[in-house]
Length: 346
Image 1 (cartoon, rainbow, N blue to C red):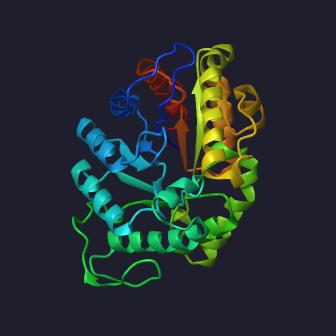
Image 2 (cartoon, helix red, strand yellow; image 1 turned 90 degrees about the vertical axis):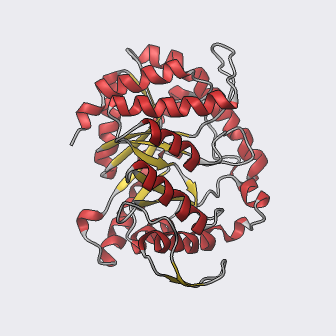
């Protein structure tokens, strides 16, 4: 199982120190964190994309390009790029450029972004059309990145006749993941397209995704894709320290602040999903899943159980949130690198 580091780039006051970094400091922290992640042996560094809120990363390809110039091997990913909101041609051009500059290291996860409806409102889009918009635009994105002659027509964009997006990516093909797990439709769409599936593991215990993963693999076979190409990943809050007590002491206050902020943001942005975040206590979330927190042995055991339960190929861990300072992030990434990553080396 490949292990990556992912960050949403929230900008919150640290409840432990009272410090609040600037937006510039938070962006720089993400770049330096990716450099440390590469040194620690992580497979990838992935950034979320958000708009009009205190998640500060609104332009992931720009930040990832800065990371590319400081690294040489780590994969450069998204968690997730907003597939329904963005122009797919712009996405294709941006991430092909990143692929060229990085020497072919892009790992593109594209999600629907329907968690925060304010993004749709601000972009002048109807959230009720999020699924057909997403599926059409991801299909166009795949075509633009994988075919030099683009001939395409759809409902939400003007048609193309014999166009070629530039630059052409170095990878053939660029890995494109479907980021989704709220419905069987997402799994079936990923299988139909022959794309790997990235689960939103932060929103529920792994067992709730079993039916979706089973349907994804069934649909993969039904669509005639090679079995060995079927891949499933997840993203999960994951915290580790020298002991379970220390892990909870350091992480619980920040986790609570972060989850309460996400809950409030949902209430403002998407009232229909305001009950999605019912629990903000790290111990409760760890006991129930989906969160992983504890000593090396506890973290290793839980990550291994998730791998076995869902047949995971990729695990993206999120460990910086709620105002964690850069020094602690770097220490945490190095600890994961020395104590956890070797256990999953392929």
